[in-house]
Image (tube, rainbow, N blue to C red):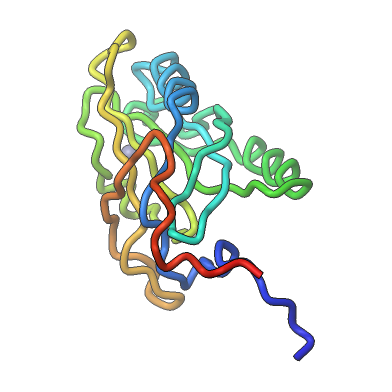
Length: 181
Ligand SMILES: [Zn+2]
């Protein structure tokens, strides 16, 4: 003995089953898209913090716009989150129950599916990728998809992405939710 049982949500680690879906409330979705429109024609990016639940749904609680610090000439088709923004957020999250659950970026004029560049950058199975396709800086209804890193192993890394369902609100608790003590 001597170890403290942990809530189910905390057992979904790097080697766990990964997310079942993303809960993106309307205000968070609007915040993501507002930022991504503003960076047109460059790719925009933002960090997403939130929580996980026992059924595997990861919920965005806050959107943190970040600068795209990729080489200026390359920002139309790639992004690199400002490391200073990432470190600052990680420090803030240390104080509370939320954690970094993923990031969002835009594909200006391209589909909301991972690019070859994205595939090569898919290292972390604990982060959800949100990709929004914008047809222009004023696109009223961009397509937004969420992706989980797929086939990840500690030795081999990832072999791509799998699509995730996106919902505005969390689904009802599953029938096999553990009884609370
Ligand atoms: Zn991309």
